[in-house]
Image (cartoon, rainbow, N blue to C red; front, top):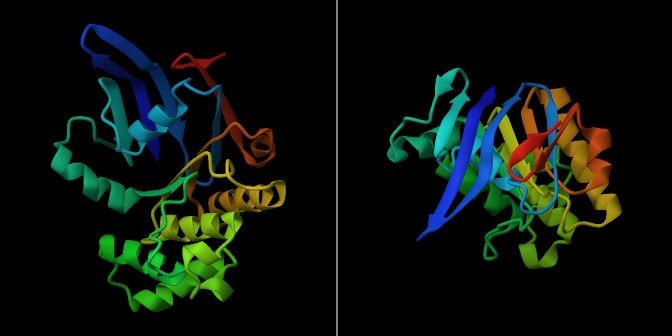
Length: 221
């Protein structure tokens, strides 16, 4: 579904150069949970940001659904992201002035959803993550686990084939972390999504179909 071919990302500031990702080859497949582990600063987030068309590689190529996106103009990338990707971040990134349902509706509108009522689809997505009963609650009234579930519902808005989750359990207790990891595995196995998780959490290994390790910007053997 998504393939990184010898991708690199170099950051420069004046005469200082840092190679955050160094010639990495990695693929994501439908129906599979890919877990990327490694120490802080190893390049994990930079790698999935390139695979999700958020960052542009300074070397190599990213292929999405058989199409090379590396040479596309920056103006074309938002449409690629809207069509193919759902993103989950550890900081939740919910709109504080919107309810759980309205947070999901906002992403549906952003993605140009045109298959029926926005509110009905938002409720359906919250049902998928077992949070429909909290649909009218604001983020300030939700627990950390509930906020992350709203973030998952937003990631599913528009039915993207690829889910990228960056440290999705970092702010959760053990019970909620396990539930969130189960949800991610269910998305892959039950709905055929290609799922990539970046995590330090050793519990995540039990929910992954494939585990790779990064160190110093490279996949370690």
